[in-house]
Image (cartoon, rainbow, N blue to C red; front, side):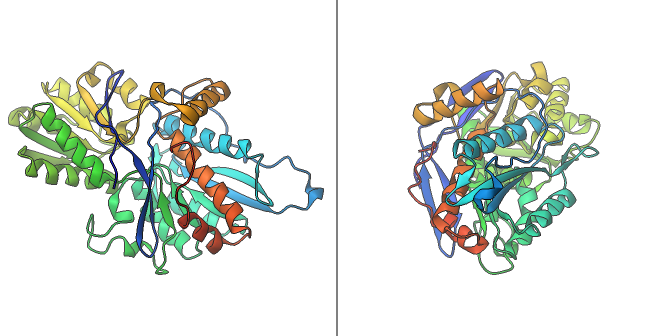
Length: 402
């Protein structure tokens, strides 16, 4: 399995907890994990930009066929900064390849799976994106999703056409691993009987456990758990609870919240009455994580607030403000300032191009694009099944993650 390096983020601070690595979770007929050396950036604000399709400038007279890579990420609402950083990184990888892979011209289109009304990803928008990709004969690779719940929507749609997905961010274990979530997972997501989904990040059965162990290291003997009721948030909270109970942390209460509620004073009142040493939040920034923390602080909670990588972004820190003092989050990566070799070169090139440091998942988006480009070249044909198989055949990949 290898070791894992996790970052605990305090407000304007990053701490490395343990040395280690990260893996590409490529579950084909049999589970295989290719270990990669972790290198992931700490967030920096990214200026707004439009999202035109990246089309090749190569002359049509050359007669080269086009293969399209699309991404589906939340580009509206609080996740914009994180997602546009991934989009920029994907573009960088394609540009560096000369917008070509093998004998094919590469085009890229960034799709938004969020809506203005919800200001977060929505199932109907993700389904729309997946169907658009499915029905475009040029689309051979789908990079996404950011949110595990969105992947639950798009995997079965794309599975029917052997259209490979490479996620730079999904961490819910049940998307690929049995016995980690619902009873019928992961097979329920693959109606064809074969797999089409991969990820380049570690799953929450690791991260939730790390969160519980870190709570114990912080001195917590009791904990209260809050989750946003989504697939990712509830799943990682469940792992935290299971691990906490095993290592001697007493669970004093748990609440599931509405991510669009106007306030969380009722939860804060409950927390104040129960006086836990730590509160664990399973969820994402888009689901009012900062507001939850603010209301807890306003309600008198002074203990540690711990969350997963779903709150590992500048939007959470900026929105929480002073309330984020004493808040921590786990993340499978290291600070951009600690990058070395090709990872540092990536960060430098990104900053030169976009005048900001890459956000946390940008480097994973870059690597996902590199894997896609290599698979297209290895397959040698414009065929979804063969490109999917080439992705699953990837091992000992010499990318910027190691």
